[in-house]
Amino acid sequence: MMMHSIRHIPIALLMAAFVLPAQGQNKVATTAAPFLNIATDARAAAMGSAQAALEGGPNVVHWNPATLARIDGERAVGFVRSDWFIDSEFYYVSTGFKTPVAHLGINIMVLDYGEMEVTTISNPEGTGETFTPQDISIGVTAARNVTDRFSAGATVKYVRQKIWNEQATGAGLDLGVYYNTGYRNLRIGMSMTNFGSDMQLSGKDLRRAIDIDPNIEGNNPRLAASLETDEWPMPLGFRVGVAFDALASETQRVTVAIDAVHPNDNSESTNFGVEYAFREFFFLRGGYRQAFSDEIDDGGLTGGFGLQYQVTRDVTAHFDYVFQDFGELGTPQMWTLGATF
Image (cartoon, rainbow, N blue to C red; front, top):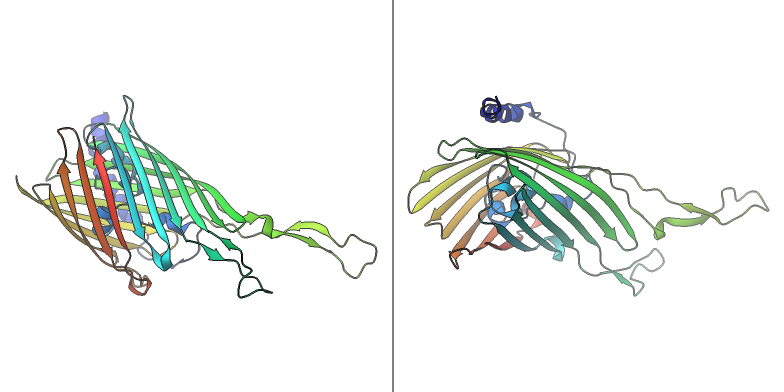
């Protein structure tokens, strides 16, 4: 009975893709923690972030936590760095390992905006003080191979945004499933990411001493009060993807991946990616991010390459690089170092 149900999972996933609204209102800048949408792997980013149905080490749990169960070897580690927009820096560190019960992983994402000068209404040129705004997410992932073809996984994450003396915190959840049909290595994946609590800035700079009625004499003119900021949701996203090997021989491979994406802070779009592999040593990749969307103007071409080398019988290391076109926002570059052992 269980195997009979699992055979219908690909059909259910494909049907879910058509349930997503065909069109939606653009809701750019209506969520907190937009850094959670940054790609966390150079290989995946080079393939247009079409990653829901692709394995790729602990870095790609960002798109689908179920893929952690498909890592090669007993353990894997990954490190990502990117010079992001406006002199900010992006870092991502992840690890995954196999246990008798499931595959477990830990990841840390940091977006560092660098040092900034404090300015006020009375000192618009600066007070001489500085601060360092920063966004951080810490996640723990668990994934399990239910069968040799079907995997499921989940990530629980702590999210914090900090600017000067104020910060907003929240908790999020990612869920994902993965299925390999066994035909031409056709894989199907589906995930929901960043389902969690609303985030609200709070801190000592929002505290004020006020006089609730200046026209009345004798009352307390310095009552303690706090300014209340709005609450904003996390960037919730739904993703359905397929990937297959268009070419597979002893020396060469061509993999094609397609994702349909439905976010709560933007319009629906589609991501495309292609990877060419020569002897699983040298890789060329290309893709297009956020296609078929009339409302998104920062989508564009992506491209990159990768190298993979078997250091010892049990240790394999890889390096990946990506160039991304974000239109008017610039062309941030990213690289990944990783190993399985």
